[in-house]
Image (tube, rainbow, N blue to C red; front, side):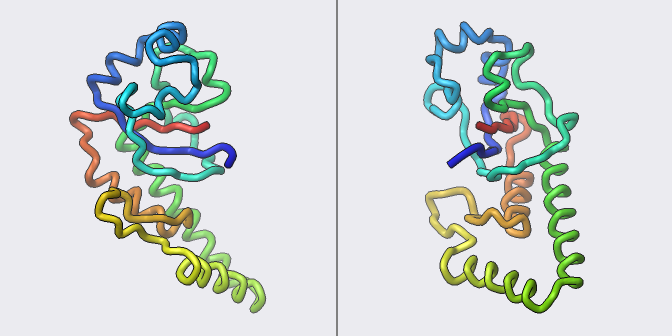
Length: 170
């Protein structure tokens, strides 16, 4: 499947408990699997949304989750997000969609048909939304123009008072 990026959350209480741990302390408490945070019942981490791959966000917008450098940080990202960071992602995606559609006006007829075909596949062979009442996400697409709506939902419903946003990749 390859490298993927995610937004998730942990409670501020759990964040305070984790942020100062050394790598040895993490391993002792949670095991030496680099994806220890995937086990929600262990770490308190909950995945909110898969952003997919090729997330080239400005590193200056992301804060270190741990208060010190960890060895695994070269293999995976585990960073602290913020309301401003989430808004930055939304605006980043908006800019990509805007640029795509502006550029689409200059495309050949074949390129326009190819775009129509990908949109047809999205709606005929796939379903870009999730109507399952047991799942929080509403978007099941990696198209930026749809992902934006999921990110706005997270932005508007996230409990910024009690939770911290976590940006992960691995």
